[in-house]
Image (cartoon, rainbow, N blue to C red; front, side, top):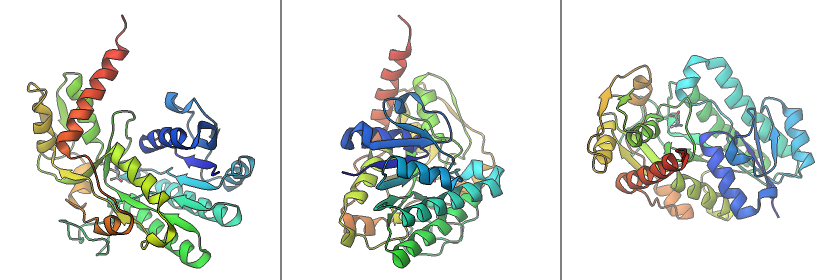
Length: 319
Ligand code: AKB
């Protein structure tokens, strides 16, 4: 029986991944950790406060709970990272090295660590970006993710550590909110739409970015971790694709259900980050190696986001 540690469990991905792992593995077998106090969704199971920069605290938690598997999600995202480059490097890089070293020194069998489309940059081919290509990221988040990919592969080759990773596109879900990313607009837009409010978009109308519905992202993560080791040919990080769209296209898809929805465009410093990321991703390696296939396109995601957020809003209205 595996005992799982999730770092950064209070984040957008961490909240939903912890919930799913607890359903599949048993609540007591999934130890959520974060530097912040647990959110409501995490309160049903074990929680430890953890600063990933504190290696001895990390080791203590690993030993206390006999951890055998780690999902190391704690990180600062692209837009927030540009405000505090050195701190972002420390958290993203030293946090990962602490986890890799702790795994090497203990009984950890398998690690999941998320990379991102941010590893690509202005010189990368932007349409159908291949698995292996030019990578010259120009955000500190992207630089830390690219360096992290190299470290993951190094620990696999040198120490035989079973580290697995995907390059997530922008993630969109209704249960938890993102923070500090460039793709965050694609979650906020649905919240505004169901609240019948106009949305001011921080990207230009025609900025195309790769995105993915959260349930696809969770399933990809779980399927990757379940694959037999001999199926994993990429030990840096797999390209992963769900859908690609522009703000104009997501707004049009919302208007199919909420015709009165209004969007305006006020691009800010995040535009430059988005401009240097790919439009679309070639994930054929993940499909060939471990059978990855997304289920959600823009239309299906919009339907589910609007339905779920509307139900959530109604449930929150006092009688
Ligand atoms: C961000 O926008 O920074 C993240 C990402 C694509 O990694 N959502």
